View 1: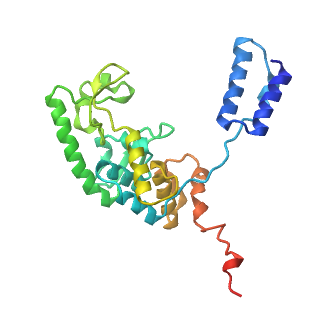
View 2: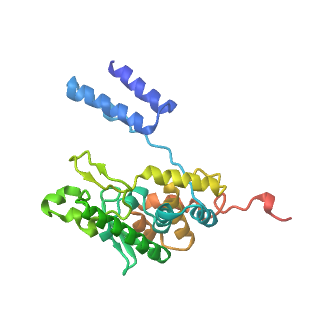
View 3: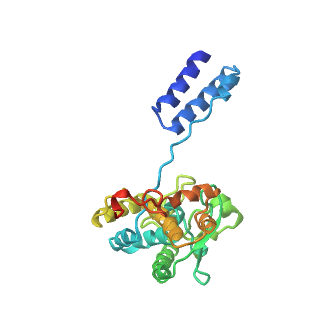
Length: 276
């Protein structure tokens, strides 16, 4: 494939939009690697082709009543997880990977470790969820103590901390807030451990709750995070505060949630609704 053919191929992908932006960029990177690293041919003109940009999509957001209706159709651990997603703005995997030591009841806060972009941040712990979460942790601790009695009770520690702090993986503070119901073999080292709850189970429960609530929006667990941000902005909270709670690097990412604040089309009153 010559230079002209490569340029025509990438241009055709970009103009016609036959594939997703990420696929277009991946194709460009692959061609660059092929010619520069394998064929050792410099293609300076290829650097001038702009990377494809993903189209901006408005997030699905539940109303306050819809969010309450979804939560009303959940129970047990799934209700608790969904309540945390809506009440704190956590991403689903951030919630499932929570460790006991990172929940601070006395300060009413949750420390998110290694969030998106490997960043730590602090978000709030809703008062209405604190008591149910404490009761949940009592059950989790009893499960952990049974695992210890059976010779187990160790969880995976990130960044090789198990070598730096031998035995820390069996300590209560390092246990997952939402542990799996069964033990499994860790493919990283072959150890049998209790991992955290799988995200697919929460996604299925959320899908069923949305259906049972009679909501037609394609809501997922991540929709609860979108709703958290939107409802805070509706409540008059500063966008910078919301940005910090969500863990966004750029405030422009948080700005997308202002799309509902004006209600309807930018707050415009339809001529059909105007009297006279």
